[in-house]
Length: 432
Image (spheres, rainbow, N blue to C red):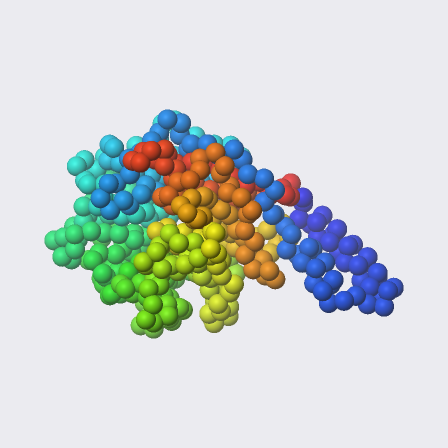
């Protein structure tokens, strides 16, 4: 629906509503709240999900058989709705790439475009996800760790992917054998900032020219898991846990101060699982994270997804997704997938995808959005009823400018073979 036409219709409904209230001597607060909620929070609810399909037919990938890191992959969406997807083909040790153009019902390449061959690198030494950022709607960059080395790739809109750059070796320069939690972003002067974890420390470096990289600087120590947020105007911030994964912190890059958002109860066996965060277009920071029992990580009742957001520079704990005896979010192994987008009524809406574990051992992808009044509204059934019961799903989520919710996740075809699957949610109202 055209947004200006919708605003006009909403105004007519409001006039009729208020006229009715006056005629009947006023309305109850609960009725007012209900009608207001319908007017202002109904926009772009998901009406249906597309039939799930492999990102590329016949493509399967081995699962690492030591650390079981899953299927390393990540994606980014441009402002026009174009999706860039990167993944690691473990059997041939290659980074691969596919795109989905706006309006298309599938990813374009068959097979994937090969970005780089990493030769004899052990797939179990791969970081769980590569960092990806968009220089423009059509120009992605990626960075990743492999065998203790930090690599970088940049896409050229004319010539395609440039040759991989080996930036430095953490084993010789930092005394660390692995690089994980890799993130890349741009500052206002278009310098490329790279963040990564090596050992138990989190580092930062800047790529200032072709293969020209500043020496890495330690910015955090005693780190378990970390992620980086781009704050706009060149600002960056960090969400991270301590190495014991008992405390969750938030800090702005370049500041010595950090805020502790959450601590698990002392003396118990709870831990913090996957984390994710982003900043919306109005400057609010949203942080989600898993909480689980380290002794029974697949027990639904012990799993939960916590949610904090920063309102006017103050952190507020919002409603959580709690587990029950029958089902709950699988919080230990995967990060909740998160995006925030404006709906058809002009309101910002938080979207979430996560793996739900059901008793005794079932695993399914579920979608939820956050309602300001009622908290998390969770889909009644899995978004995928075809490729079901897959333990290592690692969902990725992006919301397009038309309100479509795009999901990519990993489905276990057999114990060691995995397929990247794509499904999209069609909103109830599509914008004209």
